[in-house]
Image 1: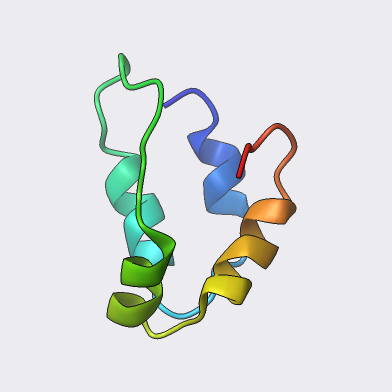
Image 2: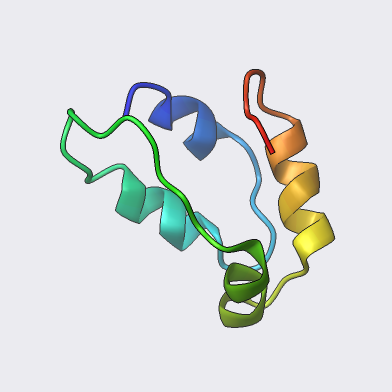
Length: 63
């Protein structure tokens, strides 16, 4: 993923850093990933609002 370093550089709520580390192992041809915020919040011990706040720090992310 082209901008994985930017994703890895921000603090993630709960245990979401695990997802970023997993995404960094994606093939170089990966252009986009779609995940469910409600499911991530539940599985990784955070809230949808905290996920949105983290993503809002990234330039160019469309929510």
